[in-house]
Structure formats: C-alpha cells, structure tokens
Length: 188
Image (cartoon, rainbow, N blue to C red):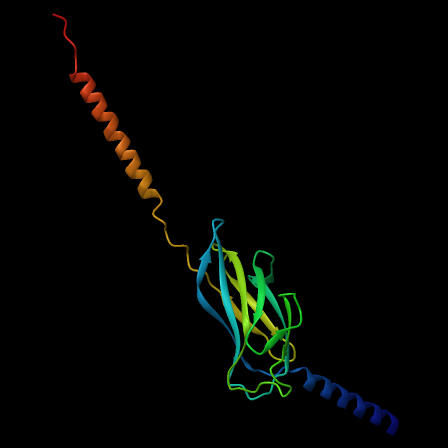
C-alpha cells in the first residue's frame, strides 16, 4: 500500500509541475503599424510594422519568435512576410522572416530598457483581403495577435480623363457634321 501511495504522490507531483510549467509569461509586446500602405500596380498593399516591448522588467540578450500570417484564423500564403530589419544594437541570426532569431550585440549584459525596439517587418497583402492577422509567437512568452487592416486604395480619378476625351470627341464630330452640311457649293 505504501508503494502504491508513493507512486500516486510522485505521479500527482509530476502532473502538477508539468501543468504549472506550461503557462507562458505575458509581456507587453507590441506589433505597431508604421506609416501608410504602399500600393503597387497589382493591388497589393505593403505595410511596415515595428516590433517593440513596452513596460519591460526583464533583461534581454536574445529573442526568438515565429511570425504566422493568417486569414480567418488559418495560416495562408496570400500574405507575404518580407525581410525583418533589426533595430540598433540587435543582430539578426536567421534569414527566415517567419522564424526570427535576434541577438543583442551592443554589450554582454543585454538590454533592460523600459521600452525595447527589436526591429521592423514588412508585410504585403492584397488590398481586398479581409479578416487578416499576424501571430507573433515569442519563444517562452505569450502569443501576440495583430490584425492587419489595409485602407482602400485611394481613387485615382482615372474615369475623368476618359469622360472629358469622350465629350471632346463628341463636340468635334458634331461641329464637323454641322459645318459640312452648311458649307454647300453652288454652281452658277
């Protein structure tokens, strides 16, 4: 009986430690849009986002994170994640923008500022694609979800020159028709 109780106690202790170790620490990571959307001829919007940590109480010497673009909660390849550019003091150890690994290279103690900027990331998506977000998953910390909203591309007024050209051609043909009819030659 003692053996059974000791196995039971060790098992419960193992489960308790396992469950307690799963919880990720919540930090105030921000994924903020910087600047306006840059549009191309294909109707794609390229937007830059800055990754920063506010209200920091930790010292960081490195950071690993995954970036997952999603549409309606599902991973997608319709959203392109561009190059991650590290901020001053940070060195990029990986070239994959979906799996970023940073190392703080300014000193060996790391950085413990109240606000830390890690770098910028560019994201390109079709303007008409809705319900988009980015999952930012820092290793060992709580996941951050950032909605991606692109403003509608401003109207270029392309219809106005076509209307003006059509009206101009209509007036030219009407003038030609009226003057040709009134310009008869008479034989004497």
